[in-house]
Each structure stands twice: as structure tokens, then as C-alpha cells.
Length: 166
Image (tube, rainbow, N blue to C red):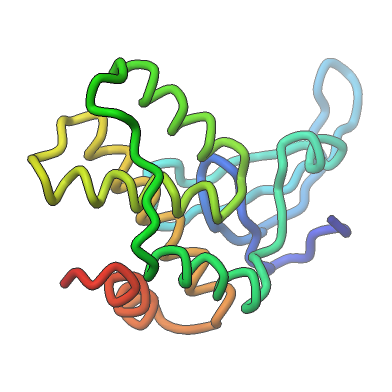
């Protein structure tokens, strides 16, 4: 990823989409360090400071291209679902889902979102699953909005129509 610019939308593998609000230098243990100040807006995270030299390691990236987004939407529209066996251990499944999301790949986020969506249609999601579902939904909505340069409502319409839910 090239150097980030003020006002540019970025994607954080854990927090989703945000904007570069400021680039500032801070003295840490006597060493001047340049930080990006990222604003994640409506999320609970708010603002995050990331050292310039850690951008690659953290996995910050630009929003996906419209072509990559379309592959993800096509997956959401398909009948294919990666769902764990009902006999699988809940904690193991939750850990796997969390690890998939942390990879920062929109397609992995979509797999978790779709699996939890399907599970939610069969029975009410537990608290941890519901929180994970909401997180993946917010991440997908932000990515759709940034990639397509559309409003949040248009993004929600695109996502819910892909799953045929309203």
C-alpha cells in the first residue's frame, strides 16, 4: 500500500473502513514517530493512531476494486454457504470466524456473514454470534459504500438484496 493521504478511505482488518484524519508526529520514548490518525466514524472504536512503519504489518489496505466486490456479491447471492457442522464446538467455530475476519479479506468476511445469516434464519443467534454478525455486516457495508462510492442506504440495499433479506 502506498502512503496514505488525508481524507482517504482505508480498510482496517479488524475495524473496517475509516478515513485518514491526520498525520502527526509524536515523541515516544524520546524518538519522534509519525502516526496516521484514523477515524472509524460510527463504530465504537472512534479514532486509532497507527505508526507509519506498521501500516503493512497491521494490514491496512485500500477498499477493494468494484470487480473484487462483485465476486463477493456473487458469492453472497449464490446458494453456496460455508457453515460449520452443528456438532462442531461453538468456541472453535467462533475462533475460526474471528480469525477469518482478522485476515482483512472481504471475501472471508462475506463467508462469515453469510454463515451467520443462515444460522440466524434457523434459530436466534446467541450474543457472541450476533455481535460477530453485526461486525461483519458493518464491515461489508463500509466496503461496499467505499468501493462503489454510494450512500450507506444504497450500500445496505445492495447487501440485503444479495442475501434476499429485508
